[in-house]
Amino acid sequence: MLNSRDFNGSAEFVRKQLSRILSSHEFKNSQVVSRFLEFVVEEVLAGRANEIKEYTVGVKALGRSPDFNPQFDALVRIHAGRLRRMLREYYNGNTSSEPLQIDIPKGSYVPVFKLLDTTNIAQASVKSTNGIGGEYQNGLYRKATVAVFPFHNLSADDSKNYFAEGIGEQLCVELARFEHLSVISYYSTYKLAAETDGREMHKLFDIDYAITGSTHFFDGLVQINVQLMLAESNAVLWSQSFTRQFNPDAVLGLQQDIFEQVLSKVADEDGIIARDITNAAATRKKSISGVYDAVYLYFSFRGRYDQESFENAKIAVERAAVLDPNNALICSLLSRLYLLNYIFRTIPDPDDLQKGKALIEKALWLDANCQYAYKALACLDTFAHWPYP
Image (cartoon, rainbow, N blue to C red; front, side, top):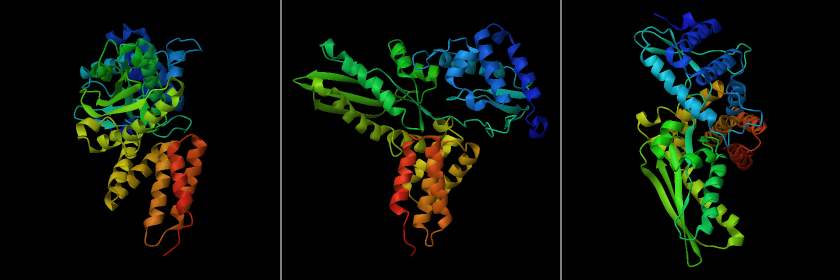
């Protein structure tokens, strides 16, 4: 029986398993998927896991030109879906004889490695050869994934189609500001929406949530209908209609007003997606784990504000900061937890205040646009001189 001592982070051990997979009939018949898998595995073993991005896979593994733009070309995402399915099929028939499982978690292109035996799967970690990057564990980069489907103009006047199309595209851009969400390129959903529904998109792109809607123009007004759905079932989680005066010269302001309301309802840390994940049954939220499970434990604390949920969130986010120390979102949330601990303790600990300050600085250094870092900074500015009792 294999255990973690047998593995020891051996690159050769991983390469032997990679060779077995690439020699199988299915992978021999798909050179594109084989190149994809070989490239990402070798990048991890070379200590470059943090460089595995959609662009680098497209250019270095799949032969796209240097001007490849993932925003307008879904090639990598499509082949990533194929690769995940082929790996599942490979191990479904071979788990009893395979010493190591190679997997590509949803929401990431970074492979993870698990030791296998005949009775259970044990998580293994691979340390990068240059000591950078820490452990790569299942779910480390798995966020809740959202796709925005095209909005449809239900009016007879086709000249207003541009307005509906602009809502979908810009909403996708605005959603990308929320670091706890992964957002599928609008171009990908725009091309495929006419041929598939949310459930098919869920299978193709591993999406969890879909946003879509419609517009209707009448009597100088525009009605904008927005829906948030569970992609797996097409069940509607939230819907709302907005009716506004329509002025062609003030379209951007009108859209921005709608975006702010939709995003605060749907995507914010107190929004519907965060609440749905924290309250979901284990079978639905099992795919969101590791670092981002800690994020949603923090959001759960925000909804309850009790001691138990605070402690659970603090432990989880501290662990996430060890696993992924250069994650601006994690640094920001941990800073807020330390600041809250400083504010509400009977005898405040100055170390909590200093830790909170340092983490805010680190978060902003990592990502100058991290909105959660600025929220933490606002908290610090408000309570930095909180008096001792």
